[in-house]
Image (cartoon, rainbow over all chains, first blue to last red):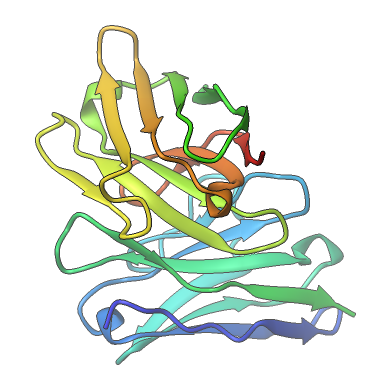
Length: 108
Length: 115
């Protein structure tokens, strides 16, 4: 299957740690990429490959994979981290991208 | 600095056609695969189509296969999406993005399909 499943919503207290997960059979052989999207803005890549952060992404963000599940961990959550988070991967055909449904993160 | 600028969105009637463009700058266009991703307002991201760096390999979502065509022009650093036989469920923001990691994104162009 090329589907990715994310919980629709998550919440974290200010300064605490949250883990957002993404599950799918395709992740057994591929790394997930993670994107942050704030209202009215285009998505922004925050993690790609084996836990690589693009320039400008704080080291509070990290990614990991285990079996069929990829995880995005945000430590010391800030109000500015409140956003929608999407995972995706390039499927085995090499010609397709598959997105998860997204997780809306609320910082309390 | 990297820029991706989409254009060509607008109102189109069901069954009609539209051509989206994405002009890029700040990187070597020929080195990267390019993609279109869409998003219905208030909903999630949906991959639409991909083209390899040399246009040899193309990929389409099942929802657009046979109706949409992705192409690129290295002479003008431009990516295109020809949208034919559009349907109301094609209404969305359309983003272009660079590379298989979708490292950089444009700001999107809104396509509204309505009679």
